[in-house]
Image (cartoon, rainbow, N blue to C red; front, side, top):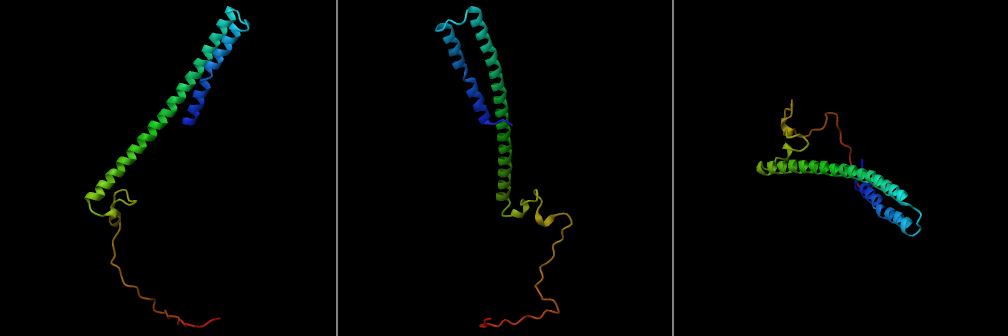
Amino acid sequence: MSDRFDFEQQILKCWNVTDDIKEVSEAITECDLLNIDETTNALNGLAAMYELKFNKLWDLFESVHMNLVRDEKFAREDAAAMRQQIQELQSGGNDYSKHYRTGGVPLNQGAGFTPTPATPYSPPPNFTPVPIIKGTKK
């Protein structure tokens, strides 16, 4: 997946167009190396090459832009869901169990759940406590 750094690199590659035009210009004016046909061919070649580079840059821009739009959409949907949960919590008192990892189903109303009253702890019948002796060292 392409990101903004790939996009930046592609922009910098396309920026070379100015250097390439300067090279052709120097070959024409200073060295007199190119005749009119060679100059036309060199410039047409540059135009074709940069047409490809800019098309690639545009495709990369669309890819990065669509990733950003998709990520922003998910973030907006998550924020809206969180706002709705907060509003429900504020309007319904402090029943946090209603939303905590249950998908909106209260914890005490799950399928097949029957609440049982709490019973005080009693040790097993064969339990004998071990006496604690204080002040002894080994």
